[in-house]
Image (cartoon, rainbow, N blue to C red; front, side, top):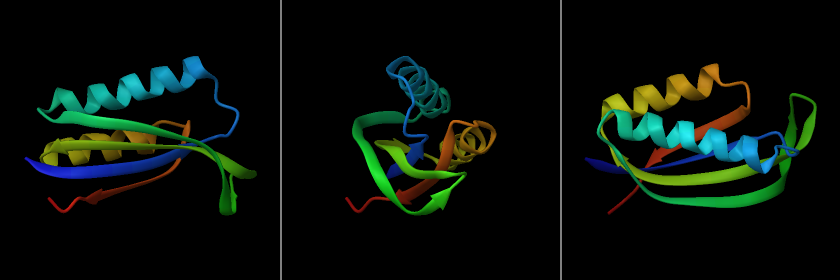
Length: 95
């Protein structure tokens, strides 16, 4: 398995319960296909470089994980169908 990190942001006013539910679903999408979550970092509210869906700020979260191509496909599918995730980026980490 290769190491990856995924960074995404949601609307800035997301509740703690909503964020917890979202993170549980993301971790489930990773582990369902044999991946493993290494670390979840909540960065909090930050200004965006440009407006996204009428928002000037977003709540950022970084997830470090190990996985395969199946995990990446499932994670991207989840991000695209989930309306709480405004933007995302997943990259490979150097070991």
